Length: 251
Image (cartoon, rainbow, N blue to C red; front, side):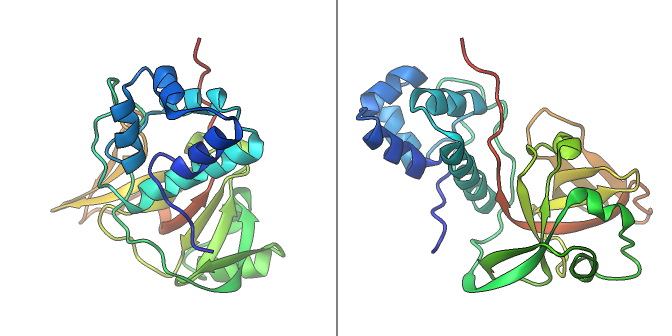
């Protein structure tokens, strides 16, 4: 089944409104925006920020399963589209996702791909074998996917890797047989054993890796003629399956 991708997770919102017997006008009051702004939000004309997303989750009483679906939908929608305005409804865009312009992944027949904890990659040597071969050899776990790609493999975030920006249990689906494209989101393995999710932004003689969240961490920048000493390897992210992001609750 093709994934429904909406930059504000409207599928889950609409279903919960119906289940909770609530109106869109009530949602407008919770978000402190106009009903016209709710209509624009439904169209994806602006991106809800993390605080607004959490208000919705609390107001509509999202359970764990619904939260997972909600954040997965909106994150993947923002992964494949940058058409929405950077403006948020009356609030700053702090926390707005910065993601790639990659086309919508084409879904084909179901297939199994290797799945492993990120921690398993401590023994991976990229000069000796492709990542997908290492995971097929080192992990007995498999994940069923219906996406086409080159060297597909899936990695699960552990509690010790939450500084990557995703909560434990989130799944990162990679194309390990493809090079990154400009503005694409990539999983980067650093030589110190840590991982980052960063945009690949080539700028002439410089290569810049930008964080997912605006005003979060500094960019990684290196010159093309230099060896990127901090980076061990990187691969494009095809899709993310998220555990709920835990934003501070509103008073």
